[in-house]
Image 1 (cartoon, protein in one colour):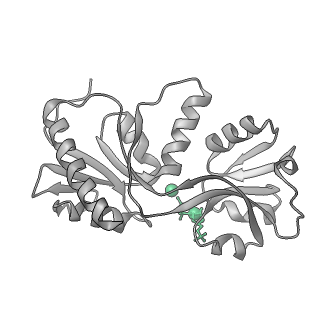
Image 2 (cartoon, rainbow, N blue to C red):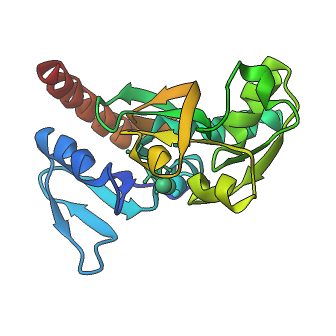
Length: 226
Ligand code: PRP
Ligand code: ZN
Ligand code: MG
């Protein structure tokens, strides 16, 4: 049973492309914080809403374990955890509450530029390097394609040149990383952007009221933005 808290706690990325826009969005909802010297915890001043600054990949787990109530993370990171749970036949108790309109990218299959790509069948029996084994496996299963997943936590784009894999399944934003590694995107598995993630479990009344307030303000800000 998680300890009772009367403050809302939001996990955001500590360093990375979502860090600044995530804080800016929460600031425009009228929130402000007093930062701790180690910069891992930011104490809410204008409302009892605190921030925890962490690695993006840890954000879904912080929510499912009840350490945080909300998180801002790429949809790709959430969907990976949902996919892994699904492949195990397990339910997942965090979900997307709002799409936030920044951090857009897509998860794509990319092949060496020298390949002549004819379609998904070309992946049969191939080795695919990725940091998203769950999303990739569900996608391959849906398509009825047998391939080998080579799981890497970073620098996926270099795997074909190193002979570790034949192709990659990685995030593409500007496309510069793929191009620099003589890879070309051929198929999208999903499109992503930053999303607000929350628990599927009921919150206690104090935090439920804070969440309502935050969602109302957020919807107002998002409406003005687009
Ligand atoms: C992604 C991806 C590539 C890069 C692609 O990593 O893994 O490295 O962005 O971007 P581009 O198309 O603009 O070149 P990212 O830094 O987003 O996340 P990570 O550090 O969690 O891998
Ligand atoms: Zn990451
Ligand atoms: Mg990267």
